[in-house]
Amino acid sequence: MDLTGAVWRKSTRSGNGGSTCVEVATNLPEVAGVRDSKDRNGPALIFAPAAWSGFLAATQSGDLNRARRICRPA
Image: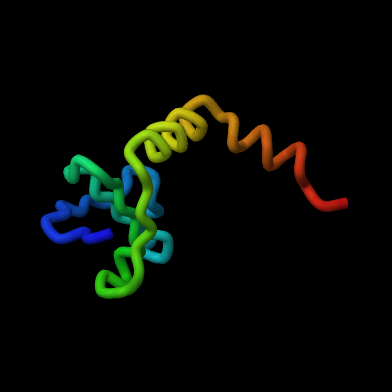
């Protein structure tokens, strides 16, 4: 999938120290992209818009935090 024309923005959840900066591009109609801002020419993760929306909804509701507490290794 091609990310030509993607407009990247720093995630509001990225750390301010610069070591955990994630950029997202949601301006393309068929995909949402995620990349490491420290390696802008490196690989990017590509999601279908519905999958990206589902991920955002799960993070905003706290569902991912609950799953992490449940699935901790013994």
